[in-house]
Every structure is written in C-alpha cells, then in structure tokens.
Length: 93
Image: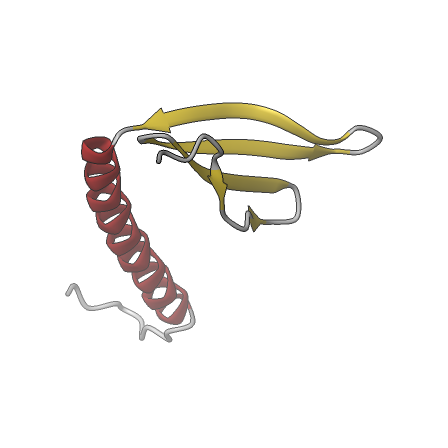
C-alpha cells in the first residue's frame, strides 16, 4: 500500500528565511520562504528533486561547505595579519 500523504520534516529557520523539506511520492520537495512584516511567511521558491538529483545536491552542498570553511579560515588569518606590526622599511616576503 502506497502512502498518498507527504512526509514533512521540521523546517530550518533563520531570522527571516525558512527552508522546508517534504517527501512526496518519489520526490523531495524543498521550499524557501521569507518573513515579511505584516504578512508573515511568504513562499519564494519550491524545487522538486528525484533521488539522483538529491545525491548530486548532497555532493555539491558538501563541496560548498568545505569552500566556505576555507574562506572563513582565510578571513580569520587575514584579520590576524591586519594587526601585525611591520618594521620600516618593510622586507618583501
């Protein structure tokens, strides 16, 4: 017996954005909503992904996560370097 109802998961919420995920039949449905004062949550985008696309999306998100972590680490290094005292005349590194 096949279930006709979608299976919903708890949304991921920020201060003004929310991502919802549901499984409906053989598709994963992602929905992005934004908070608008006076209106509440307003749907912006909805994507339906099949199983193969979900695997590809998982790989892409993992790669993006690594790149963002590297950028944060580089930014932290740059912030530390900005407080570095350099003698005059500065030597070229």
